[in-house]
Image: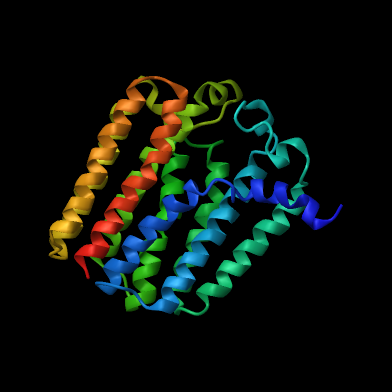
Length: 285
């Protein structure tokens, strides 16, 4: 079979047809770049980090499906994924995963030693995340750390160091990721309970929406603190306020107890993250 004939399956495996996940990784990374540069970042770093975001999100999806290849067939939402149906083999998926990671690593080589070291940690976290579902109810925290590592990496690449702003923003992004990925896990909660997959959605039970709200409040609070530490202005706070409003909207969707609304709350999170970046960009012009 020609590679072109397989492309739809590889595209699905890398979730190139579902860009929301990429946006959820992209916007917080851009928070980091703009904060580190105190304005528009260097063009070379912007290109490296944007392309790297797309590559690592694709790699994360591939290793996730590889880890769940024997489980996805038992979940209604995932039973038609390429690895679950055998349209792509495990070996092909691993080759693709390592190829994407190598491509991303080559990009990081154009930064500095500290950023390269942080990138190794980011890859380890991304690769570990899907396997954590077997051992802990907090795989969402591992995913959050993997996604948010782009923020200290951005600071390191731009300034040669990290600092309080980098780690406050990192923690805010982790809290946001735990919140939205819990909504995502709530879609599959009944299936996960049947096959023994752990998640914060399973752990939180009927308190899920309330606890998500606490993580979202922590995210907003930390971003407000970032604004104070960096003496940011009104447009930044307007962006954070927009995020807070969208979080309230998501909470309303979650309380409906409708599966499709859980997924809507998840996808809405990228608009919340985008609003903060837009506010930051305007504020730092």
